[in-house]
Length: 104
Image 1 (tube, helix red, strand yellow):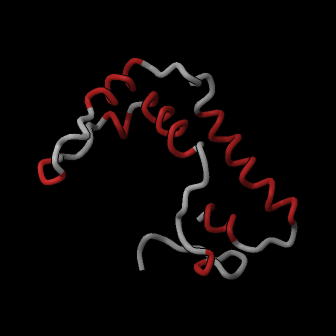
Image 2: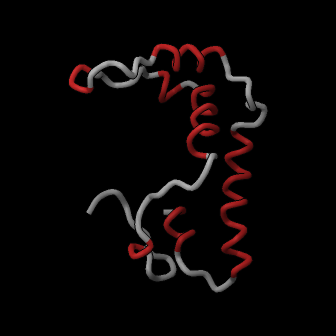
């Protein structure tokens, strides 16, 4: 909902511009101190991944991908903090306070 609301029109350009910075600052606190150095457990989890496994034989990722704080930091740094993530179309949030979910 927060992402969709950030796409909704706002009466203040300054308020709209401040939202992504505030969100990024909050996420940056989570990943503070994790520049190039990645924790050993996160490195082990990534090393265990085999992209050559055919999709038909693939299984769910290890539970550590969902629970390890170092893996979370790595994922935030490498995926989510590198740029904008498309979550929907602007037509889905035409009016202030509009939002959408993954279900119809």
